[in-house]
Length: 435
Image (cartoon, helix red, strand yellow):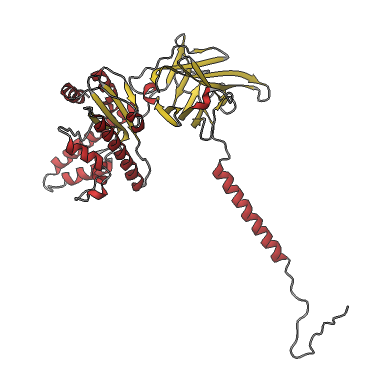
């Protein structure tokens, strides 16, 4: 991390103070080897804009490997170097922004990475990211503002398996049949090194892969906890949605969200997340209001997420969540997706509420407003019901096939053979036809 910090100090000391940070979810040097159009086949490359930027740049630096903690803290290091807060943008928002060469700016562009097993999907995602980089470069070129661009990721996309390292150690150790003792000692040293690296990677993964939840304490004891893989808000302006990701400002190593205004007691709790300069609003708050009470039908206490409020520059947008977000008071609530626009869980309080101009999206969302103990979530009550759409589809298909099979068996059982047969040696059977 110190070495990376020294690189950044050297680069930003003599380079433009406008920094573009392309932060991808995952990336490894193998991605460029696999999808970079090897053996001169540049038409198949997923990084044409990136290659063009490196060739046209007056100076460039490529670091093949960066430690996980250093890569995860690159935003904080750039923020310290530039003495300015990061601004999360997309190419459309950048085209409306006017930069000044004398004023430092840290512009962050979040880029996805496919985690599926389909290689084409990974290449398509990387090609899309390269197009975003190309759009941003074109916009900066049109504004004639000098800049420094950084392309990195939060964590690696691939890890060297211990099996391949064991095979490599075996091959390296077996090169000499006459030095059995040296080969054995070398293999033991290799295994010790692998174990040490594995422990270090596990510790780094624990630090960077899963960040701790937001916890509000009242009187030194925790009473509200919140965690989400992604927190996003969007506002409708000029016929299109402007989006802002609040995840990096809420969770992560070294991030301490401001919780002024939060409260909790035996029956009500409220978690207030305070932000600044979000989507053009100087003051911005995200408020989660919860309550708990006893229900006689179930003979137990339940807590509900009564409202999710967005307070911005003296205005308030309120979403009602009590109909869908609830759990036993001693449990936490968890849901893979909590939104107000796609399979909505949150709904605007009224048809004229400002919430109709806002969108909120919480991915892998978990919250607990009461009975928090030990700084950990209680057992989670998941929003997914027992009968999912896939289960219903399978049950209905099976029922239809059972009905068809039953009808076919019934028709077969109704078949009867004739009680008399025509004998070719005897008289023919005559069937009288009378009215």
